[in-house]
Structure formats: C-alpha cells, structure tokens
Length: 396
Image (tube, rainbow, N blue to C red; front, side):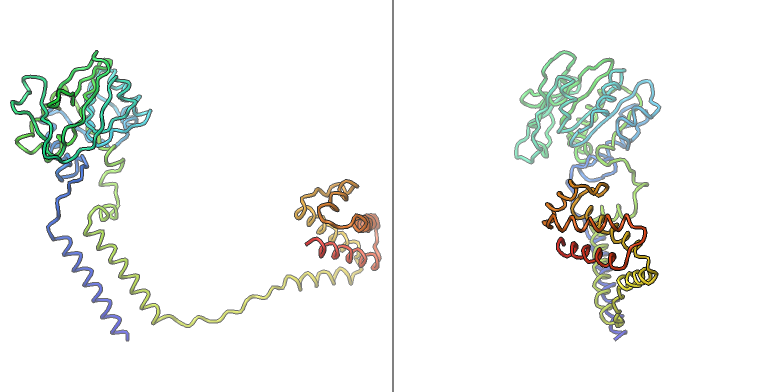
C-alpha cells in the first residue's frame, strides 16, 4: 500500500512539472494590454520610449519615480528647473498631489501629461475640458498632425488602435497654444501656461507606447511631442501605474502571480498537495481515542461550602451571601437599582416580575430582619432561603 501511494505521488509530481515546463516554453500570445509601464516590452508598454528619452533631452538624466507626487515634490531635493512626465490611462490624483503639482509648475517647471481620462479639477483650474471616448479599433481612424509647420508631416499620423475621437475643449484661449490636432481640427495636444511654467496636455498616450514609438511611420510623433519640453532634468512617473514598490521590493510570489504559466503551476502544486493529503490522511489516520466529558463539579463545590457554613452555625453569613446574590440577579435580570430598597423599588419590582406585592413585602421584610440581626436562627435562615428560591422559580 505504501509503495502504491509513493507511485501516485511521483506520477502527480512529474505531471505537474511537465505541464509547468510546457506552459513556460510554449510561444506566448501577444499581450495587448495598455500598461504604459517602463518595465513592459509588450506593444503598449513604454520601455522603448523611456530608454530613448535621454537622447531627446540632450543626455540629461531621466529618473523613473515610484513615489506619489506630493512625496516627491515635498521630500526630494529638486533642481532649479525640471520636467515631470506622466503617461497613463487615467490621470487621477488627489487634492494634495494636485496642489503640489500646480505649485511646481507655477515656479517655472513643466509637466507633460498624456492620458485619456484627466482629473476634472485640474483641467477646470486650467480652463480646459477633455472629452472621453474609449479607444477602439476601427477601419477608419482620424489623421493626427502637428500645427507647427516644422513638425507637420505631409500625410499626418494614423494610429489604428485609436480612432482619434478624443479631443480637448478650450474654454479660454488665453495662455493656451494648440500644438497638434486631428483631421476635424479638434485639439489633441495643448500647451497651457500656468505661472512661470507650462502644462503640456496630450490625450493620445497610445502614441507614446512601444508599438508606435518603434514603428518608422509613427515613431517621430512621440519624440516630437516630447521635444516641446526644455532640455533639463526630467522625472518619469511610474507611481500612477505600478504603485510604490519596485521590483526589488516585491516578493517572489508577486512575480509568480504575474506569469500565467508559473501561476497555474503554483495552483496545481497546491491542489495536488491537497488531494494527496486527503487520500494519504484517510489511509494513515490513527484511531481517535474517546475522551470523556469533564464532570462539572461546581455544584458539588457550592454544596460543600454551604454545608461548611451551615455546620458552623454561621447563619448570618450564609444569609448575607444569599441576599447579595438575589440583589445581583435583580440588577442583571430586571435592570433595577438595589442601593435603596424603598417602596418605589418594591413597586417597580412587583410590576416587572408580576410577583404579588404582598410576597415582595414579605421577602424584603425577612431580608431586612436578616441584615439587622447580629445572629440569625436556623429557622429564620431556612425561611429566608425558601422565599428567595420561590422568587427565582416564579421569575425565571
């Protein structure tokens, strides 16, 4: 039986290992997810663009950030002038980040934002509104082109994965320059002056991804867009896409969960171990001994203590403990205060318990007698005990 179990175990292990190797080495389908991340080589990642950015900025450093905007702008030592680039699906920031970003630009710095969905509050401050239509794959897509004749391409730029229906609505033309537009002359790239600096608003982030940045027909669109930024130290934001922790701060299981073959192999290992534990446990489980239920000796203990007091003829002490227990029961059971056992208390107790008022008076009369007496007779103790037990039975 043991040898049979061992054969099953090794068969299951080899099956899982073989499946994992097959999934790992088989050709992987192309992932068209728009991640806009600088670590992704997939079509809609931005690894190629980020690697080429130092050439765009004349060899200036381009630092990738995994910090919130507020933390970076308040805790880091910044150069006199710099650029801040955001390329993402949704540019969604909170009030603290927005305030610091506006102050950053006001001091003479530049912010480049390429996204489909912008923070309404930020655009409201800049007197601009963005139309939002999800990118879709269509047979016909609007041609994009720059306004500047130097950058303008004779046939324009076409991005098949985005039909080009998104554009900006400019409420006030003051301090706003249209840098690029679609075939309908709707602005898709704006330069907005704010304080001493500028915001560059761009609503075609797919154009900055690997797929289009490496395509000869469209590669110069991304670099021409970014060339509007001055040559100075530049920060590339990854916090809005990847969060705060970098790859060196992530556990091995986070990496496993991002790789479909490894993830499925991990799940199969867990499932196999679970199945093995069930079948092996059934065959090797020992007999569970019958355990007797522990006896409740509390009642015997109380009876023993009671007999001890009774044999010592300490009737007053027993009476006091019975009275204290009764008053505690009244407080917890009926919510009445027992510090004053006056007429009002007795009437309230009678109404709540349904106990006859005469019986209440007799009960508390004997209680008063027991509390006044220094020594209590055995007959008086038994009489008090009968009345208290009768009260318990009729009110429970």
